Image (spheres, rainbow, N blue to C red):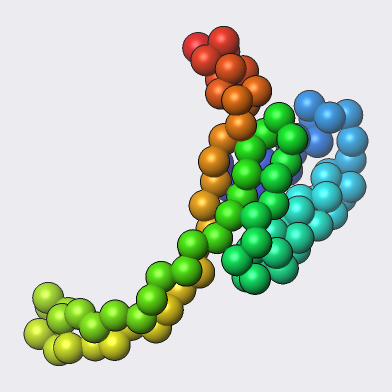
Amino acid sequence: MDNKTFINNLAERCGRGNADVQRLVEGLASVLRDRCSNLATVAVPAFGNFGAVKTDEYIATDPDTGKTMLYPPEIKLTFTPGSMLKKHIRNER
């Protein structure tokens, strides 16, 4: 599902306009970016927790070229679903 389809579906289910839902999604993304870049977690009650995991830099060999490269550290976003979300998904199937 692409972003436009997601926004349209969410707006339809919430009974709100696409522009309003777009601002809400962008706001959520902004909060996640700000908090998780500092390695903090964001808890959304009954939905789940967003967190960040920092990976250290590492050296690896590119299998195509055979060159040794230094890869920089990264911060990856993780999501752990909450129990209410898990129950809702199980009941839907």
